[in-house]
Length: 157
Image 1 (cartoon, rainbow, N blue to C red):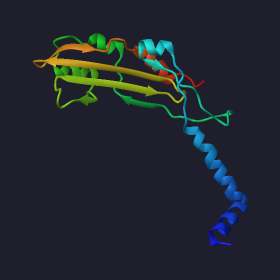
Image 2 (cartoon, helix red, strand yellow):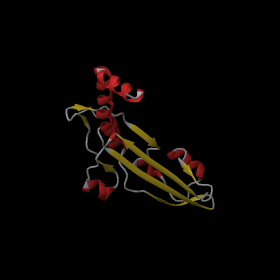
Image 3 (cartoon, rainbow, N blue to C red):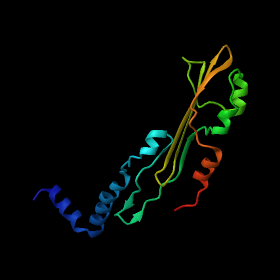
């Protein structure tokens, strides 16, 4: 009998090793996530829902909230006016997350909040400059500060 086959047979006899291997195989399914289409989110492009994952269909899997980018509220965009200087825009909205070297007259403020429950909030504001002044801006359909605070501070369900 070859040495390799005896090693495999010995390993399979150990119940602890077999249990550990089965546990690893079962836990790999925890990383998968199915998206649930939300017609309201598709229309507004602000909030999207993702189905919850459960370990073995019973125990909920903990997922931390993940916030990326600059939150820009509806109130902040209401204060943004054509003709403002870059310093005024930076004071009002913060430093832009994206400043493209090839498009120096465009500042991007992307934002993404992914709650552990699967709810995703996306927004994107773009400010365009001409001759050192705001020429126009995009991204009008944004949540209000009160709505945002409710999303991050709402009690867990």
